[in-house]
Picture 1 (cartoon, rainbow, N blue to C red):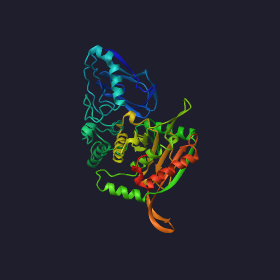
Picture 2: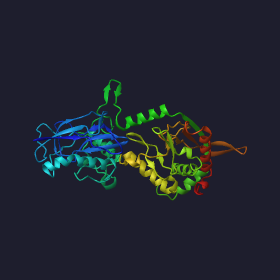
Picture 3: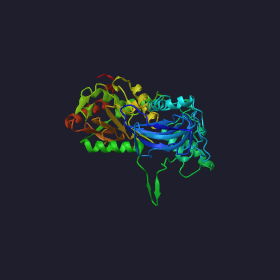
Length: 436
């Protein structure tokens, strides 16, 4: 028998540590090579770390919510001389709620010596989204997002029993929710009151209160929002826009569209047009160097609500895209963020962000700037109401744009002028297609 110490691999992008989000194994469990052992969080990317060898788990390092430095001990395995798992009489199943039979490593001792490198490469593939959408990986593991895998673990649901409707059989959120609903209706052994609610196992109920540890994406969101409000002097500006003509155009285009257009693609096209005139608003602040970086390309962040909290996937080079291309790409990256399959590069690099609460948009809002950007534009609800035009009352469709700017680098006059330019484009939608 021998012991294999697996250290947290370098996840790239200058990462020096990763937060433990959820362990999928515990001491005493038997795992096969390439089984997922732990989910970690780096920046905004949730990464599933596979086992480098087959063996019995001896010990693990770090609890959910704790950070582990790259290169430090993460998990210790006990293996036989051929890299095969040692049978464990007291291990009824793996931490992920599925039985994990022992599996032989391919190369004996050599395989063990290479296991760390193979696992590191596999982790990097996971972080970059390679292979997303396959029905099962080469180890036969069901394909789904880390968020759904965690919900299944918490609820005791066997993912192999769920038919995935996503690309190549990938299980999406709707598949999981439908399966849980069917199980509850049947009153089966999984019909527990907490199934499908996504309550973390570390949540502690005490009478009329419940304590939920803030970890993973939610912790990163809280940290980033706090830093943005603490460090950035926000200048808020709200402008009323008459979108009657825009609504007429939108309805006309949607009459023959397979996928209906929202207001957001029109707003993004308008942004791409006016930012040529206001380059100080299409910028990011490099605090370490004390430098404002103005961008020629418009990489628009799309604020997206997901089961794990708010994420901002990015539509790149919006200035070069058509209306339909923008709509399609916005839908694609938002869905990737919601289902947890967005690649790391799809969640970073935006130069300005747009946000919309859809029908919940309200009258006005004060969106928080997505640092290191210096501007964000929020869409509020569009409603028909009476307005005075040329001395007469008319019913028009009105909508407010709520924007915030970093007042250190964007003067109030320039912020207001940029929103006025947006207003002009949106109120006369033909100008959106006349070029810059």
